[in-house]
Length: 90
Image (cartoon, rainbow, N blue to C red; front, side, top):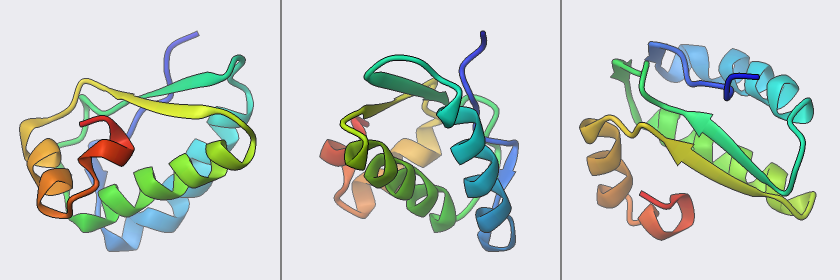
């Protein structure tokens, strides 16, 4: 099964639907470590960081961890600007 992934666009108006969709996909994932692929993400704002942090909180509550793969450079930069790179493994 392919890793759940962030969509090409993740702006404020997309965040709630994207979060709901990813929560459903992650519920089907097995194991203590869950990966979300970010490589398709092209257009985004700080909502992308918020969605990843919320997924991390959800998984932590279940005793699981979130890993993000294929970081777009601009997303990695944004995570660093917000100072949460250690939380998201950026």
